Image 1 (cartoon, one colour):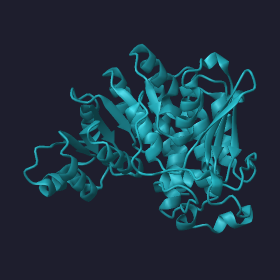
Image 2 (cartoon, rainbow, N blue to C red):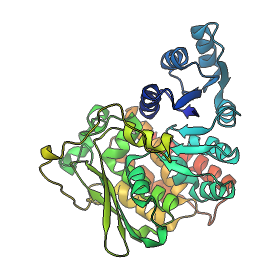
Image 3 (cartoon, rainbow, N blue to C red):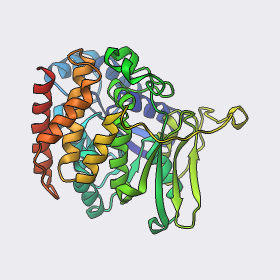
Image 4 (cartoon, one colour):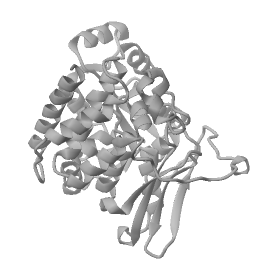
Amino acid sequence: MKRIAILGSTGSIGVSALDVISALRDEFKVIGLSTNSNVSALTEQIKRFRPKIACVMSEDKAACLKNSIGKSRTKIVVGLDGLLEIVTHSDVDLVLVAIAGSISLLPLLEAIKAKKQIALASKEALVSGGEVVMKAAKRNNVKILPVDSEHSAIFQCLNGDHKRSLKKIYLTGSGGPLRRLSKKAFHALVPEEVINHPKWSMGKKISVDSATLMNKGLEVIEAMRLFSIDLDSIEVLIHPEAVVHSMVEFVDGSILAQMAVCDMRIPIQYALGYPERMPQKFNLRLDLKKINGFTFSRPDLKKFPCLKLAYHAARDAGTYPAVLNASNEEAVLSFLDGRIRFTKIPEVIEKVLSRHRSKDKPALKDILEADKWSREEAKALCFQ
């Protein structure tokens, strides 16, 4: 039995992971759970799964949680220190990191130092601190198992084949909810329209990233880190059918693709169960007879400038990816809160990047400083 801690258990990835664990109770046991502020959802999860430890991010929410769970034996911890206590808990074998944003970076590094197996859904940690994270993983002999459907697809296609045989990665994406909408209409978009993804059910932040195609940009940087591949060997393809979750091309011209229905429980179960491929109990099966065809096209970088900005940050490297990620997080939050228009998101990111003085081969301190600086810059721009 594999013992699991889930950071971000009340989000879409966390809820899907708990569905997988419920379906395979003989294989997995929940040890730790965490949420930012969703006390009601975490209360129900504690009552159902009886973890040894659970975390919320504020003292006020912790008091509410303790009151709501009554005489439960679950230990309640608070804030970043609480997350670190969960990921280093002696009973935890695998940590599923599913916290949105770069706040996941420090818990991820601590879990690696504690030699826990990692299932990674929070791409922001690898975007901001990829070099530091991958060096730590190598130093501690820890395998990072990707949970993103695209990176899980690549990982599965590469399984058993040496990376020296790899020539190219094709990262696919549906194109998001705005694929067919004229760019002229972007300025009037409201959050409810932007987060209405045609294929995936996701949290608000990642749904906005999908609409701007920033999500693909972050995935490009994540793929560079995870698979040690150059930027020029990664190509983004718009694939509206969302059946092929990504592809790899080998030096002999062969291309392997991973296909599945759009349900995150499939890559989550693969990561939790690795290296075994466990039977799936949700009946999530592709009906190939109903697929009329596959289409692939290049993304429109003029219509979706966030993807272009991500390419620039990836190429410039240093602390630019951390600045890209942090400024995007703040701009997206401001859009969701109604402070800026949708079209201002890339404008804010571009201005913050242009003002940044990058550090080559950054240490963790440099990354955290760049993250903090860029958030302050982005917030100032959003409140103008």
